[in-house]
Amino acid sequence: MPTATPPARALHLASHDTAGIVALADKYLTPNYKNAPIVFVRGEGPWNIAEDGKRYLDFSAGVAVNALGHGHPDLVAALQAQVALLIHQSNYWHNAHAAPLAQNLCDRFEQATGGVKARAFFCNSGAEGTEATVKLARRYHAKTLGKPRPGIITMQGSFHGRTYAAMTATAQPKYQDGFEPLVPGFKYAKFGNLASIEALIDDQTGAVMLEVVQGEGGVCVPPAGFFRDLRKLCDDRGLLLLLDEVQTGLGRTGTFFAFEQEGIVPDILWLAKALGGGVPVGAMLAREPVAQALVAGCHATTFGANALATLAGRVTLAVMDRDGLVEHSRDVGAFLLQRLHQEFDGRPYTVDVRGRGLMVGVAIQGDPKAVVEAARARGLLVSVAGANVLRLTPPLIVDRDHCDFAARTLREAADDVLAP
Ligand SMILES: Cc1ncc(COP(=O)(O)O)c(C=O)c1O
Image (cartoon, rainbow, N blue to C red; front, side, top):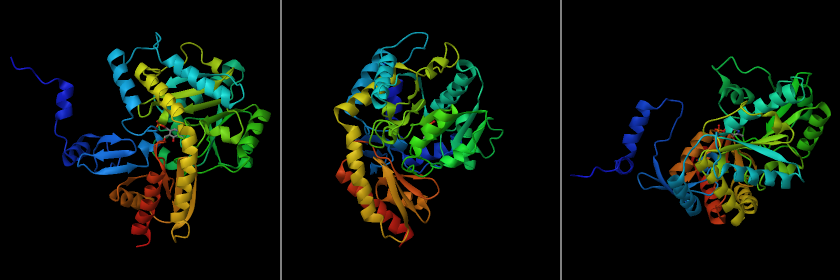
């Protein structure tokens, strides 16, 4: 009797030429993404390989996700072993990885804050971390403190995700257009401007939510001292300080948490993107006693704390520690910034070169999308942030040669488009 090819193997072997996949996507996927016509089939470290064999140096990393690069041997081996053992069970029981990952993250929080204790809630994405944070902040005021203060102040140009509360927190009209009515209770201040935050506080305000460095808004670095002043304002007015570290966290800006560079302690922070090295997992960390407001049954998510995802988080953190990737991000990030300055300073279209660690942006006069396409044609992947910023968020494993290539290639691409 002929043996049938196992289904997974058959899927893997099926011929997926680029034109065929693009045609299927055009026909069957909802049209909310404008995918470039490239089908990636493989990754090796900081490189991505497309179906047609072309190699690209990945300075986007799935938008700050693949911290260990692609196909990292430790992550691959651990995931393969875990898949064979257990992929998923529900939060009715424990698995072997969620609690140890929580311990790891809470220990880091405690260390970064000089002894502040926290607890972790796991979810699957950045937006889910935002939702959990909004719910916890409101519930803490309503139940623990006994006085509802549902108002949350967020920042113009922010990005917190696409679900309803996250989209409402995201103070950029283009992301909200057509989705009204939004979630009530949000007001928008200016990032880096304490007076504009203070002006919005009233007796309903319970929290201030912001990124440490605005990512999607254009790699906007806060002014010196702003976060210290904001922490004091929150303390004086009884407000929770909620830090979205979905993009900035996990070594991206050169310290494990970006808030460490600001000398403050948040009440709640949340992570996602890099945590699973590409496997979807997010985590909200809430300091005590705020965390206690999430009593049994009041919040949950089916896939949160999933064995495979939390194992991926443990391996990602272990590799980061073993290989010193946080320090590396700071050092090689400084080199990348310097090389970008060398390439872009003095060009007629350059507005600014800025960033922290390996979260770097080049603001230009002109269409950043056209430059991103030109860079791609030259074998470099970067993304657009804000209206006019070329954003570089490479894997934390890149070396100086990669940064050198990226800085030079991006400038050549910008010249192609903006100064031919
Ligand atoms: C700061 C920040 N928060 C939240 C999110 C939303 O994350 P996700 O797309 O995983 O829902 C993002 C995504 O880019 C982000 O950059």
